[in-house]
Length: 222
Image (cartoon, rainbow, N blue to C red):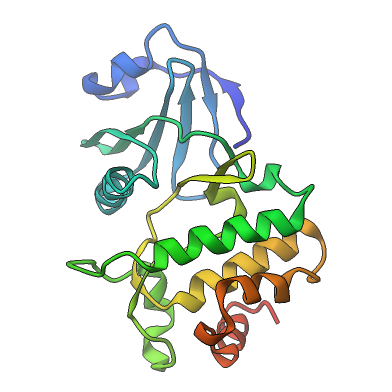
């Protein structure tokens, strides 16, 4: 994540958050419109969003960490706003691993297949499905990330380490993750020549190309 040094007013934050910020250099690492992400050089990310909007993400973050595939949740507080404190996930995001596209595809496919194999017990609907469900085209039979793009996959020497930004994770259709992964590969590599390789690695027998086309049309990515 990009980090820009910034200043804060400590009293703008709940007292419970102060110990993660006091006497630290603070960097803005935000990349979304609806939330702010700060990095404290004490070794914490603090995500700030409208009240009530991070409760779900905090629960899923904790589940992913307990499953060995996510960052550690340190604290979640809902006050004037929502505040979620996490430890940094190990490694660097997958946009730092573009030099070997074949190896990158292999790691992404393997990590996606593992995520999609997780049990569906008591898993709530992915918010990603809300946009599609009225058309009754996609299924809801897989644990998905919901935003399976390269910046949200942490790697170390091309080995998978963690998923981050898991607020859209939940029950959904595997094709949502597949679509956003191949789109992100195209976007970052500036070519679609690795699309077929990724689809082969994931397993063509588990892919319905008409669903990928449907998602592309809905997302205006044709």
